[in-house]
Length: 195
Image 1: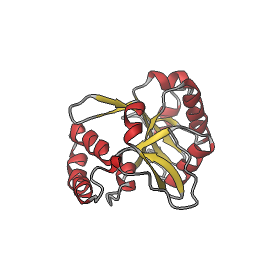
Image 2: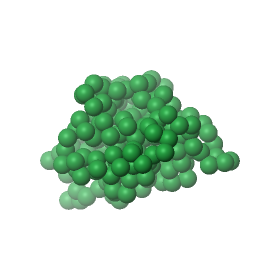
Image 3: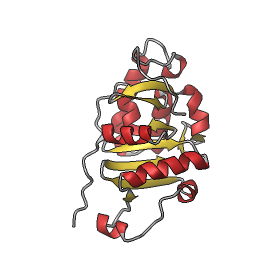
């Protein structure tokens, strides 16, 4: 029984989401890496815009990646047997859904917590996010301060380990909070807003 995730293929995940024109914010460990963190991550955290059309595009992208639920305690084969429909209605009903794809583990979030535990949605975070190039694709990345706040609230051991580096990156940012600076996209790149 194979229970190990395929290696995380960030380039492929980004390309598929781009091709399907999915509107999302990159959050979690990959957002931290986009802000300069060196700590590796094993999954792709996506905070999607919650419109029916966008969730339909997300479902199509995930279907193309052979997404299947990732359920603690179940093997990949057992999770596949659950026969969960991957469609916009199902994605809209789930606050957090964890998936295994052919390009690695992929999590779809409805919101992330701020430092006080209030839930921040795509619409809340979008004004503070910025376009950044990640693996050759321009994506919207949650502000570093929002990534830090969500990790502070989650209070997991892996977050405790990641926070010192993230706080150092925030404190060393000559612009102050990353959310206050202009979007930085290399010249000649597509500035299309994924959100």
